[in-house]
Image (cartoon, rainbow, N blue to C red; front, side, top):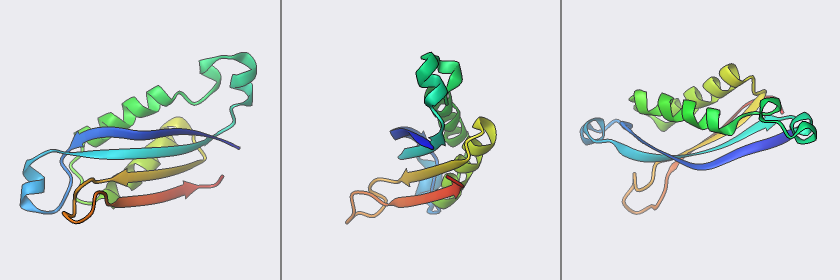
Length: 117
């Protein structure tokens, strides 16, 4: 199985449990790795034969912008389930970064894997 990836997809959204976090949008960064068989697409040189990462990114930006998750864990799970169900992806790795959530750290976040590779 091959992997299609998308790194540093930035989305402004409401995320967090603190009062100020529920009031002010923050930027999260999302990294995706998705299992896909790209042999047919490579042979045909045809977008319709592969996983359209632009369509995936558009859907995930919409999902995250429209939601107001308290936890990045919940956000990551929703992203994984959306990709697997709407794009027929058998395996996905999702990393959600919440930069500067802790003043002494440049970045915090979660990484989850769902499905079978």
